[in-house]
Image 1 (spheres, rainbow, N blue to C red):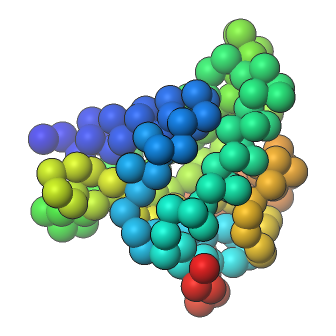
Image 2 (cartoon, rainbow, N blue to C red):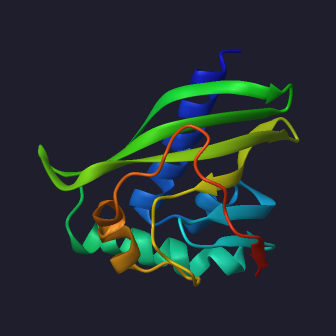
Length: 161
């Protein structure tokens, strides 16, 4: 199947779960351990509970701002292996037809486990060196400038959570 289509479908599933505040659907799409990278730190997240606060902060911020559309559009994706797709996308956050923040680019990887494509790695442009990520981390994403794509700069070693 087309890797761009698979990557976009995974993005859509997670975006819908995030907008609805459905942590069970969100965490079902994550392959643990999960590597979550910001511009300043890497985190190796070992279990779903370690992502709950970050998820709640993002989902809550979207609800607080009245977000109607949380859209992540895939631009490129390709097989790194038969069971891994690496891709990048832009995130668009809208209230009706108005953006509330400029779009930003991110890079993620999905792996096929038990017949499902799940996210195993994410690289976000946030300046954050602790978890959980906060609504401030999300809303200031672009103030630091977009990250280099598609490979992005080398990151520090991962902190285990």
